[in-house]
Image (cartoon, rainbow, N blue to C red; front, top):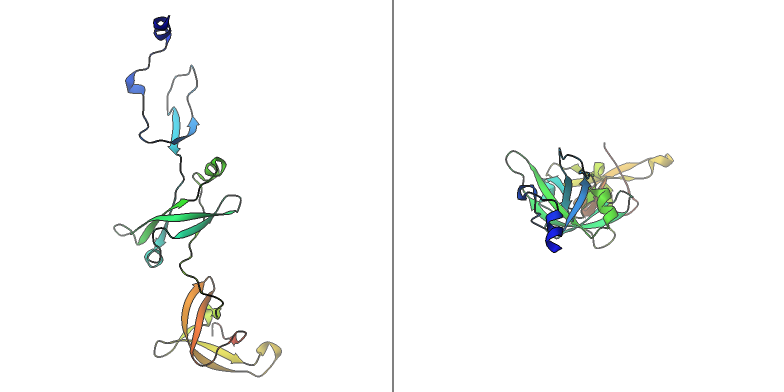
Length: 199
């Protein structure tokens, strides 16, 4: 009976068998249908894990290192953590470096939504120890000796007051979009002072 069962099974040529070298794998699509003639890919598979790949200018990439933490938004807008796994210099004429990241564990549904999509990744390269003074980027000017300065307004022109200005030499620090940390070196600069922007 066992021989009869084996003899009744369909034969599959060895040349039509493909072995996956690594497991686990994820089946993304099955194009073959029972009884139909196969005229294209029978199945599409991918890795069971999701990776993020991006690029950055050399100056920015040099601030990053393997195992730095990052964050990106899932399709529903929820932030999700990731870890940098590789920072690779550009090859040939390319000036942009490649950044590889591995997200923290994701659900099967999240993996499905992320596959083939673009995400925006945020990576913090520094942080202050507490509250700091900051001014708009456009408030910084260069002095004749290369020093960095801000121009502080004495009086409030918005209230129609007569105003004068004075220059304060500062040291710039960490920056965020639109603002930069400053420490006064020569002159006084305090929270709430009005500074001249874009003169």
